[in-house]
Length: 397
Ligand code: ADP
Image 1 (cartoon, helix red, strand yellow):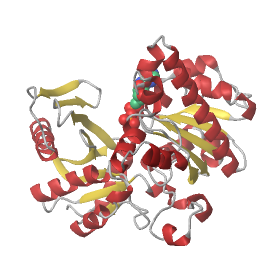
Image 2 (cartoon, helix red, strand yellow):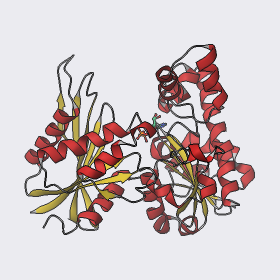
Image 3 (cartoon, rainbow, N blue to C red):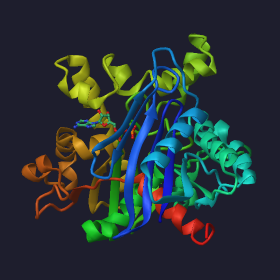
C-alpha cells in the first residue's frame, strides 16, 4: 500500500490537485495531477498521470454549476477509482496569506482555519477560496491531517525596512505592511538552485515569477530580502489582468472624480488592467505575442519595461546582482520575453546566449556574462507536499 499526499490549490472557480507517493524512488513522486475548472460557469474536470497522459476527463452540461464541495467530491472519487493500492495520508493546501503570525506551514486545525479566516480582508479574492477545501475535507474526514502552506511565509526573512510602508504606526500596527507573495514558488526555486546554479543559490539573485500573477523576489543566499508584491498581490509588476504598482492617488481620483466604489475599483485593478487592460485584447501573453496589433505590442513593451525597472529596485536592495532566474508560465516558456528582458538589462552585465535561451536553459547567459541568467521550472505543489510530509510524518500511522 503506497502512502499518498494530496495537494489542493483552490481558486474562486478552479481547484488544481496533485497527488504524490511519499515513497517514490527520489522521495516524493508525482502520481497524478489535474484540475476542476469553470466551477460556476461550465465545469470541466481533467486529470493526467505522471507522464502527462490523460487519465480522466469529465464535462458537466451547459448551465450546470459545481460548488467547491462537489468538485472536491469528484476529485476524491477520481483518486479512489484510479488509485488502487494508494492510501491518502494527508492533504496540503496552498493558502495565500499567513499574516504576521504564520511564517511557517502549519497543521490546519479548526482554530487555525478560524484565525486564517480573519486575514480574508488582506486577500479577499484568494483567502476564502483557499480555506474552503480545508473545511470541506475536515467535514468529509475529520481525522485526515491537513497542512496550510502560505504564499507569504518565505518573505518573513525580510528586514523590517523592506516590510514597511511610510504610514503612521497606528496603521502599520493593523497589519498594513508589505508581506510579499508567490513564496512557495520562490522557496521551491531556492531549494532547486544549489543543484542547478550553485553560484546563483549563494549570491545576490533576483527571481522573476512571471505567470498570470507576476512578481520579483530579491534573494540573498536563498533568503528573501525584498519583493515587488507588498500588502496585496496587486502590487509590483504589471500582470495578466492586474495593474501592479500604481500611484495611490489614482485610486483616490477614481473614487472622487468617477464616483467608483471600492468593489468597482477592485474589479478594475485586479481583473480589467494589466496586459488585458492595456492591450484591450487579452491578458494571456501567448495571445498578445501572436497578435499583430500595436496595442498588443505596447502592452508587451510596458510589461518588459516594468520588469526591468523593478529589477533595478531589487538589485538595489541586494547591493548588486549576480544572477537572474526566470520561472512560471511566461518565464519558463517565452524565450521572447526572456530575451527582451535580458537585452533591456544588458547594462547590468547580462549577456544572453540566444541558442540556450531558445532551448529553455537552464543557463541562458553566455559563459562570460557578468550576471548569469537561468530558467528554472517552479513546482509549488511539490513544495506544499514536502511541507505536508514534514508536518504530518507519524501523525497518520
Ligand atoms: P498561473 O499564474 O495562473 O499559475 P502560469 O504560471 O501558468 O499561470 O502562467 C500563465 C501565463 O503564461 C499566461 O500569460 C500564458 O500566456 C503564459 N504562457 C504559457 N506558455 C507560454 C508560451 N509558450 N509563450 C508565452 N507565454 C506563455
